[in-house]
Figure (tube, rainbow, N blue to C red):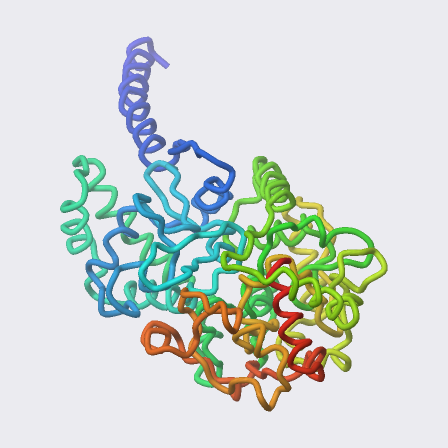
Length: 480
C-alpha cells in the first residue's frame, strides 16, 4: 500500500472515530447509563420504593407511564388515575407504593415487593389512610392494571405523536430525546406490552374467574412464565399474604406460600423478585439479602382500637385450647407446616394448580440463571400460617373468601356468600374491613363464593365454640 493510500485510510478512520465516539457515547448515555435517583429516609421507604432490579427487563419508560391515564381514562376502573386500581399512594409522593424509578439511559418505572405487600387502611371514612409496609395489599387490582396496559397498547392513540404531545405538557424533552422516544422508545414499549399480553393470555380465557383486588393466580403465573408448560384449566386465585416477621417461618419443617411450596424465606423472595422481572445480575443476591433482613426484622402494627384486656386474657385460654396446636409460636406446634387438604377442608383449586412437574422445571430454570436457593416443591395441603397481625390480614383463608374474623368462627353455611372486598375502612366490630356498607359496595369488588376457586368452606376449627368463647377469642386475636 502506497504512503498516500495509507494516509487517506488513517484520515478516514480518524473521521469515522470522531463521528462514532460521540454517537456511541450519546447512545450509551441516553439508553444504557445507570443512575440511582433517590436515597431513602427509612427502611420502610426503601421497601416501598426501592429498586429490586426490574427496570431494565420489565420497566416502562417513566414518561409513558405518567401519561397513559391522561390519554386512556376510559380503560381505568374509575376516576383518579392509578389510584383507581386501589394502589396505596402517599401524599407528596411521585408514584404509588410498590413502584420504583431508576435511570437506565432514561427514567424507567418497575415494581418491587411492596406492589403486593403494603396494606392501606383507615379507621374511619374521613381520615387519611395509613400504609403498612409488608402487609397484604388487599386493595390493588393487579389484573385490572395489567389489562389496562394491554388495552392502551392496542389503541391507535398509542403512537409517538399522541404520547409525545402529552409528555410535552408534563416535561421538556430535548430534540435528541424526542427522536429517541418517537422512533425507538415508544415503538419498543408498545411491542413489549403486547408481547407481555401474549404471556398473560391464559388469564383472559372466558371461563377463568377474575382475580379481583388483593389477589392473583400465583402458581399459574409461575408455571407460565418460568416453565413454559402448556396451559391447563386450573385456577388458583389467592390473597396476597403478609410478609412481616418473616423469620418465624424459617427452620425445621416450616414452609412459605399458601400451600407450603417454598421451604425458605430467601427462596420465596428470590422467586417473587424474578417473577417481577428482576435481573439475576451481580447485584441481585445483595438486594434479596436486604429484603430478607428487612422482613425478618419488621413487626406487624398494633391493633388501633381499644382492647378489653380482661376479655383478651380469657381469650388466650380459648386460643391455647383450640388454636395453639397449629398457630402457636413454639417448636412443638404445626406452625407454618402443611396441613393435609383432607384435614383442613378448604377450597383445593389453589393447591391443584401447582404440580411437581412445574416445581422441577422452575427449579432447573432458576439454577440455569446461576442462582442457588432451596427449590420449590409440591405438597398436599395448606400451611398453618402465623397469626401475627392477623387483625390486618382480612379477608381470610388462602383465597380471601371469608371477610372477617367473626365470620371465620361461623360454619361454612353461615359465612357470607357474597361481599365487597377492596375497601380500606376498618370494621372493629367484625374485625376485618367493611364489606357491606354503601361505600364498600360502591368502591369495592363483588366477591362471589360460588365461583370456581372462591369456596369459603373448610377450616371449621372454633366454629363449635359458644358465643362468649368466640367473643373472648376474637378479643385475644386483636392483640397478636
